[in-house]
Image (tube, rainbow, N blue to C red):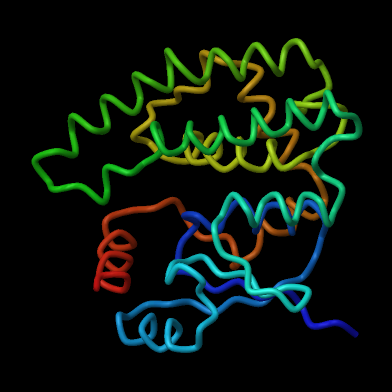
Length: 224
């Protein structure tokens, strides 16, 4: 039996979560190692497994994969989650990249900022979600009409979108933002109902949304 894919990352969702969700869609069992201290990170870097000395790391098929978008595309190709036609593949890539940008701009990154900057950062993140990103994804989901972004089954773009929308649903800081975007809200339920995803979301392997404690541990572990 082949070894299970191994994910090495922090004790949180972060940049590893889209890959975890791809594995969950496919109901693929993985193992994880969590980096919690600067010493553990330095020891991992010394192994030579991290091409650019960064996390997350996925060890699969004899490869040491880094760069989260590359990981998503590799896994998408491996598990046929990139679309079925050239047109679908193009849309999947646009929506995958757009979903990652969405989380970068409107995700809970304020936890990593100085206290005096958090309020403004949170306000900006929520405003951009409402005006720039959520209307686009609402339109795409409406036009596709299957409950998914492209085609009739989950692709890597759905995994990336679920990553940010599930945080928006779970975190009180977003003030029920999805209520104004019913297709996006329904998408969270549709994706959550995929059997492997449902199992993952109900397991202890699913980390909670980020908070101050996670941000502090992450910054300490990854600092030079």
